[in-house]
Image (cartoon, rainbow, N blue to C red; front, side, top):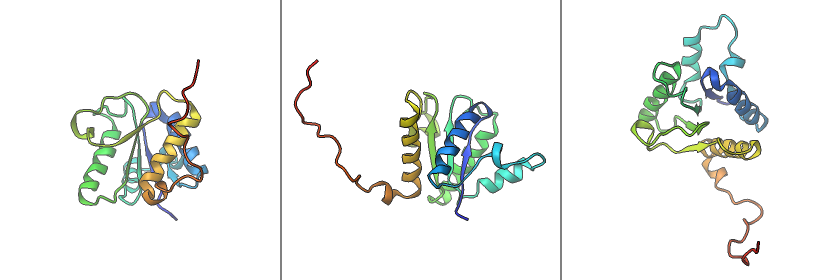
Length: 158
């Protein structure tokens, strides 16, 4: 089985995580989501350790709650940062669900994608693009079958 994208989120962002899972799975990207894949009685720490295997891409759903230092999510993303120091192939896909300030500290140089402030179709496209760029940069760079709109067209009147 192909490596699964582990969706890291807070409990308050579970609906976002389930939304992301649905879009990823329908596009053929296997996922792991605690609220779906871990049953009652599962050892949370063991499941988390297995999910954070460096070969599993980590999709981080960033919100104010996610970045609180007392949450398990802090352990999840810092573990991935440490893995990336040893092996840059350890994938991190960072998506902002809210306009959280990442301009300082360890998150500052990390490229993120934003889902807030857009409709669901646009957000789904951003999510899928972010995942494709992380998993297969060459495929993501392919030109679309049609050219983009010509930016130098006649001025529009109002």
